[in-house]
Picture 1 (cartoon, rainbow, N blue to C red):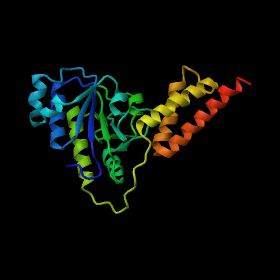
Picture 2: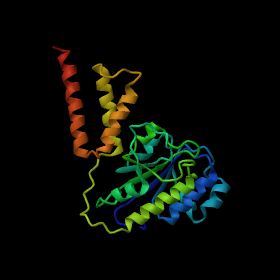
Picture 3: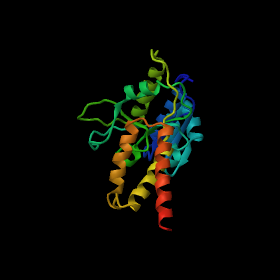
Picture 4: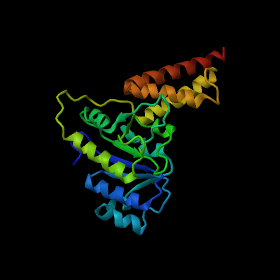
Length: 249
């Protein structure tokens, strides 16, 4: 694989693309960089149109074999590590972003990642804040602040090029074993936590999503491991058990 030995099963995920030319161009890029799979969430155009196929050229097989999902969560929950691209500069102050180069170098610090996904958002407005929180890491591609938004296929090409370039570097440090909590583990844990905190009155229904999002940001910044997220989940389960059983006494 052109992207090096650190990865297997690299998936490029497009969320609600509305331009067949962009979709075709991304399919061609998947072929250029030997991506394993193209996934598309709720496409807003005909991704099998003649326009898309003409742009795809040798990447036509990625159009023919692409997997289509109706929800982003379904598209990423079999992945060990999820990265998301964001071109917006008007994100809230609690958001955490790294440059594409820094994030890809960090990704290459692990010995092996079995399923890596990179998400790209809508052409006109990118990914929502809640969608960005489904990723383990969010990166941006540095551009002019006066015009920060890149064309979708251009953003994909730069990201795949930089990931490929990073994979060719020689890292002096010993590579770490990959054991980060997956996006699905974090998502499921916070669903349970939100239900618990609503039950005990710490959260209110109308503000719970915003508060949970802040807490989830902290967890993502901390590079929380599978063991750590399981400990947190175990605490939530034990408190729930106590609350349910104390009512019976």
